[in-house]
Image 1 (tube, rainbow, N blue to C red):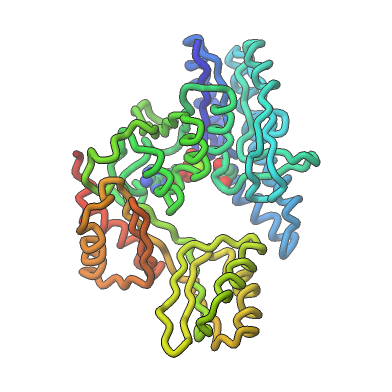
Image 2: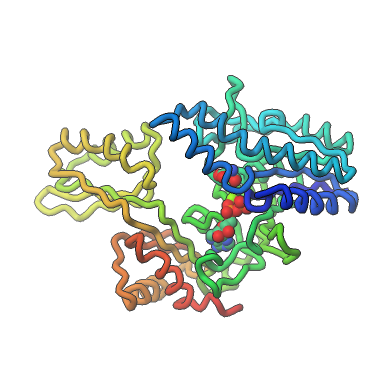
Length: 406
Ligand code: ADP
Ligand code: ASP
Ligand code: MG
């Protein structure tokens, strides 16, 4: 008897009909003699709707209250799924994140899981129940409800799989797996049979929302293979695991894009020690994540400092940086919120020349201007105009021949 952890995303449980269909899939897994733990997201666009509602009653909703509000979305779907399973004749129980022992820090809206005390889940499995856990939420030591960040149900699933010692964590979504690019944007995109944790982490971190980056990190840390597959078909899906050979493919694996990018430049910064530290320490204390950072070569002791943040953080970042810029005698702070990020990813490009040149020339042939460039060993990212991002994804998919199977 195997222990199987499955997660169903919001689009898989968008209405009563789909909840009943997911219940039948879960029942089939249980019927073959497995123990089953299911993590579920909120139905359809529930989380977006709850956020909209909060902003209708308050300009800056309390982060504590917002997390409690958002956690209700997953409570609704988990209870309905348990009811649907019971009516099929299966023993099932829904548990909130707190009841399932998901303990987190107190960073509302982006809480990190500190530990999973899975005794209750194990107890219910021993009784023969299918356990349905509300994803995306946890509880602090002070018994306050938290959420893990958008898309966080994936992370709940992998954390529970690790804590229960499951052999695999199956994430069911609305596409047939991880593709060479977002299949809703690139008609020729192909599903990948497998991908390594390292590539998947870059892909998820640089915009492919098919998987929450922290779920991939946990999978790698606890060596849990993750299967991404469709809840609407029986296609095999994509297996994310550690055994993928780094050098088999001398090619780009996938393209990611992210439209949530804003750029901030401090112009005319005196070039002396301590200034970057002052700016970035203050941003860190305000809980603002900074991505790309570029400092120009200094001319006559004056330089420009440019960095990117999420669009939603731009106003706060400006509020933090402007007073520092004024106090050090910088000339001005300017920002651009109409940007996007486009990345090519693949372990095959490690130590292999030519990928960057091919990327830049494919973009330039279409007149797409590159504003900033960053790289890791297995990724090249260009910051470009937001309006050009979708075209750029299709151009690069073609330039790297990703529609052609290996
Ligand atoms: P769920 O509600 O199941 O968690 P999400 O909407 O969070 O589903 O993630 C699935 C979506 O991710 C797909 O519908 C697809 O548009 C998008 N996506 C972006 N990049 C990729 C990719 N490389 N492969 C597959 N899907 C991708
Ligand atoms: N419901 C949450 C969201 O929409 C969490 C998730 O779906 O994983 O972000
Ligand atoms: Mg998701």
